[in-house]
Image 1 (cartoon, helix red, strand yellow):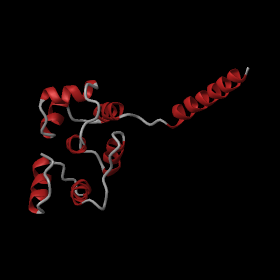
Image 2 (cartoon, helix red, strand yellow):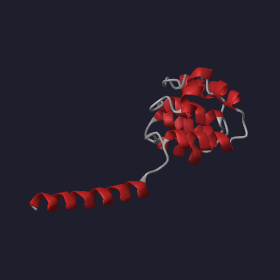
Image 3 (cartoon, rainbow, N blue to C red):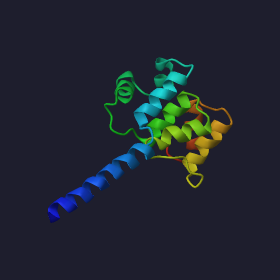
Image 4 (cartoon, rainbow, N blue to C red):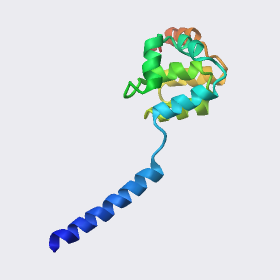
Length: 136
C-alpha cells in the first residue's frame, strides 16, 4: 500500500513536469534555423557561401545531424541571412547562446548588424583591426 502512495505521487509529479515542459519549451536550433531560412529571400547556396560554409556542413546543419553548432557558425549564418538584431538573438537563443554587450566580439557583430553590414569579410576585417578572434 505504501508503495502505491509513492508511485501515485511520482506519477502526478511526472504529469506536472511533462505539462510544464510542454508549456515552457522553446524552439530548438533546427526549427529556428529552418524557419529563418524559409523567411529569407536569399537562396540556400548564397547563404552557406556567404557564411563561409561548405555544402556538406550546411547540409548537416539543416538536416539536424549536428547536435549543437558553434556560436560563431550561427552568427555567420545569421549574417548571411541578413537577420536584424532581434532575429539574430532569437537564432542564437535557440542554441543557448546570445550576443552580449560585455563581449567585444559580440559588440562588433551587433554594430555591424545595426549598420547593415552583413558581409563576413567586412565583419572579420573589423574584428582583425581590434585584435579579436575572427568568425572565420
